[in-house]
Length: 171
Image (tube, rainbow, N blue to C red; front, side):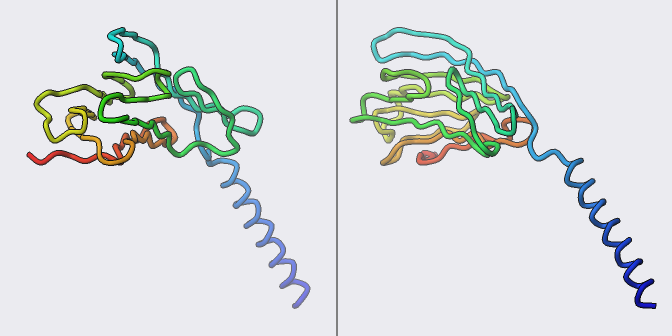
């Protein structure tokens, strides 16, 4: 009876290992995605510029290539989120180095059914520099430090956009 018990146990173990292997190979860890975006910039010197601003994650040769705008980086694991930093300097100039190497007066980014806008609003007296960030229908003001716009990813692309380091004005 012990020999038969070991044989049955071995068959069950092989079947369980096969099932685990099948599950591991059939589930996709993270899918490639590509999301097109449109970016309109208003520079502090009065110039304006429009450009594409795509976000893309591609699996290639065992690693991942993440592209945003014209920048690209290779990663060992899929990116969970991308943070766009907005730096307000002396309540005058806004720097978004992922967009441009000069200060901005404003921008509009349309990506994945979201519209993100930075603009000066003379009515926003409580806002530092009178700068307002708008994500879809929500308004945000700069707090003490830099603001962040976080793009949270899932298998299909951008799952959520969050504003951090900023506050919502009182109504």
